[in-house]
Image (cartoon, rainbow, N blue to C red; front, top):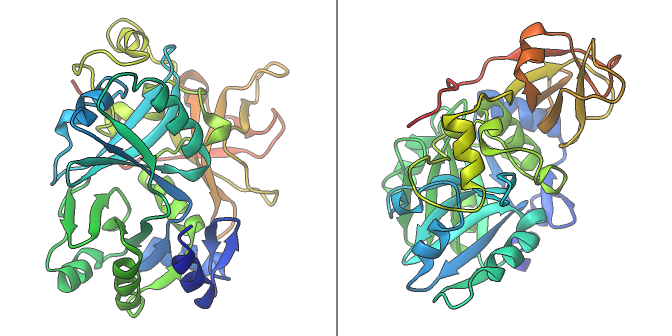
Length: 350
């Protein structure tokens, strides 16, 4: 975390956990506000990989499952990095700053992702660097968030994935129950924007932002879920995060075969579970009432406690088991899950 930004957060009362801010002292109130009003979130749990060089676009195009050529100074995208077996190693947002490409992804998987990408640079005219501490990342969400940013910055992205670079700030519109924006930039510029927006919104941490991700149906890959899913299981085809026409990349044959010849047996659902136990973690298993001993029917992708009780979560689940209901957390006798609707349809886009 940027040292000046860390000092700024501490002065504001942030409760830090290592190098990120889960909350500012009252996580339930922060989440309640996030669902209904305006929140200003620290996003230091994310890091940034900067890709530079005249062959940056072609290098990334050969590595990732979405069409990097569609990224522009006005458009970001969700994208994924797979193993040769088609399993997702990283899920990230890709955007440009000048001629460089930035990958925004969870800090906990940044180092291994960066190390693996560097293995394939070979003779390419490409440089990959950890840019996490040279910039600061925040999020802003709420019913009037677009208007507030327009009033302050002169403009704001109007549609999901649209992107605006102004001064030293990169502003990206992302999915959410309300207009929602990621903002990345220099520490002085982000701090100035934070101070202005803080008169309009409640400060919040990563827990509130993750709850908004769950309600938006946006998955995240962390260390515990690397290589657990193929892209279609995470609904990437419905999130404009997967291209079937871009050409070769690691795992492309397996991903394409599932699209054109196979039948998807698992996909991501949103669910709620009434439980007083600890919040489930990414990678935790799900079972059905008829599960054989040790045979899980799904895995948690992302989970957060809710301010009204229980847990909201995203999970990849066997479609047949989901249709039969009777889903349980942790074992066949665990707390019951109730499936909730997603804010998009699951249709593979050509």
